[in-house]
Amino acid sequence: MEAMWARFTPAADVIRQLLENGALGELQYFRADLGEYFAPEPGARLFDPELGGGSLLDLGVYLLAYDAFVFGGAPDQIDVSGNRAVTGVSADVALTLRHGAAISQLFTTLDARTPTEAFLKGANAVLEISAPFYAPSALTLRANDASSAVTERYAVRTQADGLCYEAAEAARCVAEGRTESRLHPLEDTIGTLRMLDRAEAMLD
Image 1 (cartoon, rainbow, N blue to C red):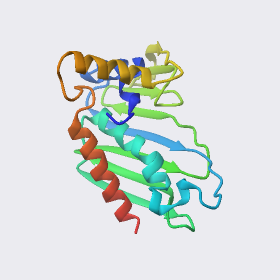
Image 2: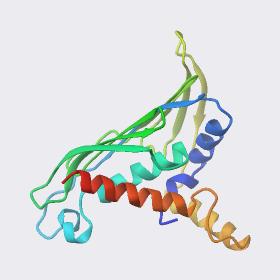
Image 3: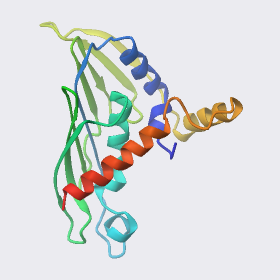
Image 4: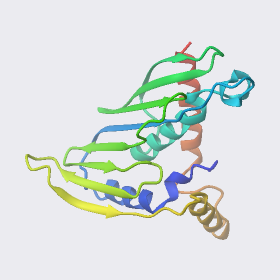
């Protein structure tokens, strides 16, 4: 499950339930960003292409994994635009994904701290996921009508070390004799890695 603990938090449980019970209706749009500032110091791993550096591989992986969580799998199409740092690693990257008729827009960068929020639009409602989207403190569901009324607001709490939730899930899997988690199956891991490879190649 490679430390993708955002899928195992209390907030993820609420989001999963909202998606499964159709509270949003058919999903139409997802947006998320993840950017941090890193000083381009000589020899820094994040700026070394030989060490897997770059915003796409280091931060974008979390966006793509979360997108797979929201939509239940890899996208049908992917478009990428961005630029590279002087060392050759990805610097600013914008991804547009297609899941059938639904669209995802994801952005990551190495040289600025971004809001780190997420937003889901369905046919019936929108879901605002507070920053940071991978460990939010609040989820707000709004109706898709003239009122934009808040229909539900969820206060959620994430422990300081989010890995504790994934560790608990791993322990359950071992106790039940399972070799993978239903919350994060192996096919999602493989799908995310394939998307990363495709996106990195499309930047060239």
